[in-house]
Image (cartoon, rainbow over all chains, first blue to last red; front, side, top):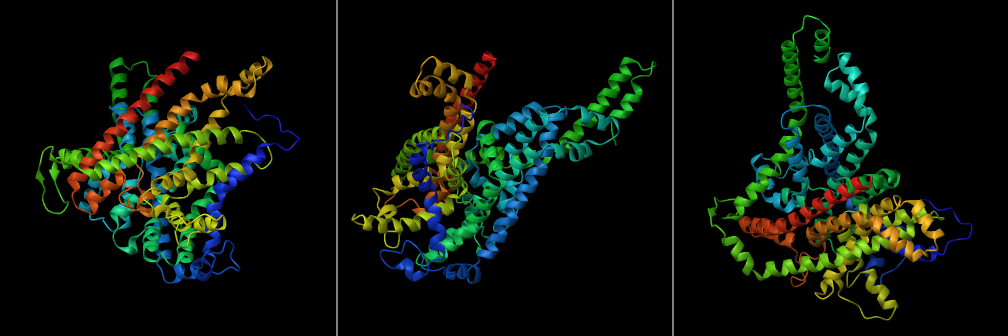
Amino acid sequence: MSSPVTSRRPSGRHLLLAPLTLCFALPLVWLVLSSVMSDAEINRFPPALWPKGIDLGGYRYVLGNAMFPRWFANSLVVALAAVLSNLLLGALGGYAFARMRFAGSRALLALMLATMVIPFQLTMIPTFLVMKELGLIDTLGALIVPSLVTPFAVFLFRQFFLGLPREMEEAAWIDGCSRLRVLFSIVMPLARPALATVAVLTFLSTWNDLSWPLIAINHDTQYTLQLGLTTFQGQHHTRWSAVMAGNVITVLPVLVAFLLAQKTFVQSLTSSGLKG
Amino acid sequence: MSTLPRALTVVPGPTVTPAAGRRAARRRGRRESATAWAFISPAVVVILGLSIVPVVWSLLLSFRADDLVTPGRWVGLDNYRALARDPNFRTAVGNTLLYSALYVPLSLAGGLVLALALNRRIRFIGLYRTLVFVPFVVSATAQGVLFSFILDPEFGVANSLLHHLGISPQGFLTDPDQAIYLLVLISLWSGVGFCVVVYLAALQDVPPELVEAARIDGAGRARVLRHIVLPTLTPVTVFLLLWQLITALQVFDLIYVTTKGGPLGSTGVVVYFVWQQAFQMFTAGYGAAAAYVLAVALLVAGGALRLVRRRQERTEGAVR
């Protein structure tokens, strides 16, 4: 079934695919449209299906009166910290497992992989207690520390490094390079696909997470966007245009990243699915 | 700094005894071992510290009455006994199973059909694929907020469309008879894309010469699909089945944002129950027990996944 020849006649599949895929797009189209509607347009019955003009009142409200900018910054800090640290610690761990011999390495790797099947709800109560002991509850630290490095990142880097030829690294050792230098100046530049995959999946999961911030954060100055959005909706359920403006702001970074790097996203998710 | 060069200068010398060589190798090994531990220890501390430790801690908690603030006391299996009698927990288990029984097969079937339809180089195919996949990157929170608005009985566009069609307004997520089915639909909207992507990738591995040969032998599209394409996809289907099942059994974010378990408990699921017990009712021991019940169910699924994968690998190896 690999790439059959393009037919000159328009395929009948369009009749199926065009309306079907439109169904996937419509809720997001409505999200954007309603975010620029005026409250009057939304609150009348039946509500308008198309805005008369672009009313930015919702955006002005969430960017001016609400704490959305703060929450956006919080989310960004948490997601970027998690990405950078997963890249660094994942690569270090993966490299040790792929290239170095040490006692217990196999058992340790197996144990780490086994932790991947532990469901979140089993660890959430004690993790909360650990974070409380560390004095991190209600700080962004409580959100960053548990996602500093995932077993998936370590495993993915290990698999990738195992697939690289050893010769160049060995030459560098003989020339007197330390392991760390070999990793950073020779191996990492070759590991762009693995770096991209780990970065994309870490960003997606930390940016989109709600349940852990919900547990670890109480004060609204420390909210992430997801937590802020759902609280905001609870408090302003009659100001739908503002809620939808906040929703657009929450979704936009991921959406833009996805549209810019669709291929990387899709490959990352397939690899997480098939190999992870 | 480095260990290798020094070792190499020793090796060629004719005077080196085997014992000295072994000593050097051992020294090298010790040093390498130290470097390796330096490399992996941050990952080990974070991963094991925040998974193995909590798993044991949770188990201990589940045998205690504990509110996370005051010192708890040991109650043995009381939490588990109480769970068995708790009607709210039973409802949560029932809702979780209903949600999973609908979401898992529908997402797989939908994913397969769409992947087959999208596996053709026609015009706009890139656009079609993007549209199907885009909802997957939207967070459950954003989905929940968006659909709360669309399905709002008063201001929602859904009732407005029904009004244009002459259908009476619906309660949607506020209707106990509709809520959980609508949550399944919302999850399908965002979750099908993942199945599509995985199936599309797997479809590229269907051997074209096999399809070609079958076509030449006069097999129609349906027979090619049934006898060649679907069998090739079986491993991926098994994987997706378990993956989606694990996702479905753990549903929480969407429910927290949309219905909070309501109306009338019709969408209360197990993870929501755990969260409520631990962080709202402050009966953490009881919540931990509920989490353990679900975790055992998940581990069974996870174990099955590993078993099937291992068998898959073995058969793949045999084919090669």
